Amino acid sequence: METRLQKVLSENGINSRRKADEMIAKGRVKVNGHTAVLGQKVNPAKDLIAVDGQNIQIRKKIPQYYILLNKPRGYITTQSDEMGRKCVADLMKNTPEKVYPIGRLDKNSEGALLFTNDGDFANLIMHPSHHVSKTYRVTVRPDITDEQLIKLSTGVEIDEKMTGEALVKVLEKENGRVVLQMTIYEGRNRQIRKMCEAVGLEVARLKRITIGPIKLGMLPPGEWRELAPGEIAAIRNSVKGNTEEGEAERKQKIQQNKAMAKNFGRAPAAKQGKGQAESKPYDKDYQKSQYGKKFTPAAKDGEKTYGKKFTQTPKGKAQAPRGSFDQIEKSFNRMMSNGRKKG
Image 1 (cartoon, rainbow, N blue to C red):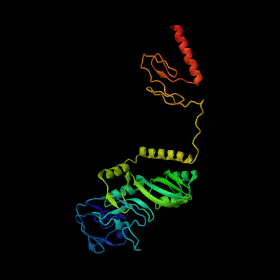
Image 2: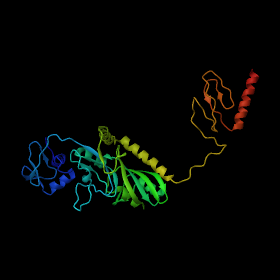
Image 3: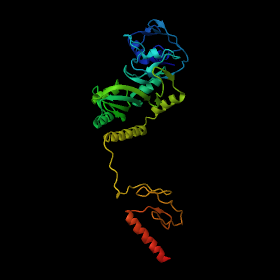
Image 4: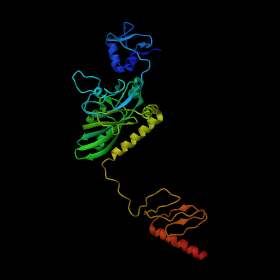
């Protein structure tokens, strides 16, 4: 069965698919003695593949691994670095198979970073059309305004292109420091930092806490763990769930977020005065009056209940009194008077 050459190289631990493409483009890969070309397909069971003059051993069945790392600050997301900087590969030396990062976190950022040797799974998460959400805890300086919140939520221009809508929530607010929770559905380079800089905010700390349904949780910095089967299924299902209905629900949440941003920092609405009754939904078992006092429990059908703050209709349907307290008293006295005359 034929498959793409870069996929074969990736699955056999040579390099990630992107790096494998670069190796092919530089002429470092040969198939059956001929220099390979980008997009070439091979039959791993029959074809002889060599990298830098060395034949690679094709394994028939390769176990697939899905790993979550809590990347510390100070590490770059690459397998090796010519300048001798610390790489995330240094933290992944004890994995059962050679795995590659899905996406990136810049050197000064920390948090959730996925690794795998399953190229299809990596493409599933990274493909922009799948809108896999990523949530960050972002500490910014010096303060944040309503206008800045709305801009971050609705989109700002970075690298001559507008960002998509985002969910932005204020978690903490102190003098000269604000902690935000930001959820985006894109994967552009240094996107969160550039978005904040575009509205005049300085990012003091940036930590990714979720990728789709996968949560970082209490995983210590520099440590990794394998994803549970349920987590792998959940992230696959979250990608499949990016339907029109799911997109509509996401946009609804963003609209609600915009409304919250507009009211951020404003004084709460004034409470209603004594003469203004607040409408409350009817509860057939237990009514509340306009002034917060409780009515007596509703009577069953066919029974009559007489009290100062509750009446029962002949058909057994409970009705809450309306109007001011004086009007309620007058109505009650009139009802009692009519009852005595009839008796």
